[in-house]
Image 1 (tube, rainbow, N blue to C red):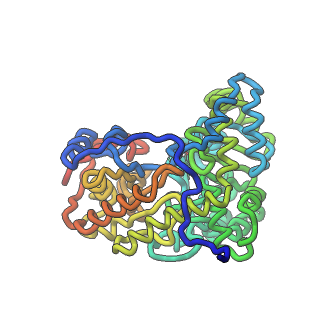
Image 2 (spheres, rainbow, N blue to C red):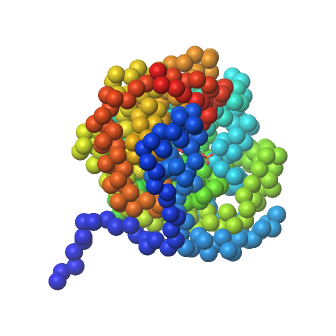
Image 3 (cartoon, helix red, strand yellow):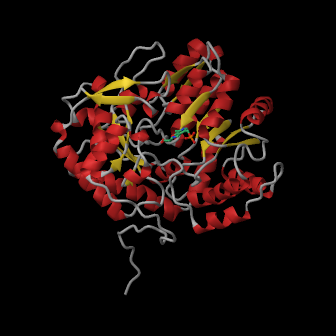
Length: 459
Ligand code: F0G
């Protein structure tokens, strides 16, 4: 027979170790959710069946990563684990200075603690919630400048994470002295996991150069972004993903990273940059809050796991499976008539809750109400990305977020196709009965990052 390419894209791994899950009933789940103040972050994982709350730190490590953990060296300064981590990061992101941190937000806290402050303004395509919170905590203003298509759930623009370069130019023309750096999030998580094109990053770089501003990447999902460039941007089809990543890095002056996403770690992150003076300030801050710069709040074994994970993250068989398995969920939901953000992002499928629940005004939190229903009806835990997360202004006034989405984030290498088939069945069932879902009222909320701990009751 001839050598043919089969169309089924299979998981490019075998299961090596399993973690049993506990089955639960609908009434039990309704009780657990009420006890948690109707906040899905308050649930015990044993009460969750399919956990799509986040793709952050929830992936399965490979046998090679577990082996690397055994090689971990816990020397306080200059451990071999640090050198392996440094070399692996530099293969993709060859910035002069590399500061490991215990996760991405620690890198953000250090960076904006140094460059932020009252009167400053930080542009980004869309700030992730912790990025925004760290910018604002410093006293600075966080401005989102994604292209208009980025706010249209139905628009099939291939790079909906792109930064609005004209808007950036306009901001810099009027406020350049207040802008310490420009940030671009790849992929744009809060906007639907949408990628940024190399052409857009190049254009952003040009505007940064025009005003003499450094460009930083929030690069958590760099490998998925690079895969989208390879498969969607002209001229990249034959380029290895690792080369595309290096091309992305070469356009930037620095980066923040959560190693809990594409680098396939369960914990970790880093801050990297070329500027010596900035690095020195950040290193000092890092020593205060994270630890000595060769471990940065991590155990040596964590650094080793990330060193191996980074190489696995740019494996093209893995990325082909990863992106295909996410779109498998999206396509099935779209076919079932569930309004989903298109094109499908890399790490998650986003349901447009505002459209699915038109009877609920944004201030009754349609996204959160839908997420609660998915849990009660099927034990599927998702996450609202909408008015609960972004609705509270720095002025203390609550307003509808641009979109009310529910994110089904897919942990890396963790769930099988039948888990996803089950999820499709649950979401489709809930969507069919969407008009039965009632609104919510917030009962308690903290001053910042309210979505993590706010409590709710039915309206
Ligand atoms: N930037 C982006 C784009 C993120 O998605 C995250 C985390 C961070 C920064 C912060 O990294 O968690 O290591 O401190 N996102 C997770 C999520 C929590 O669920 O999307 P961290």
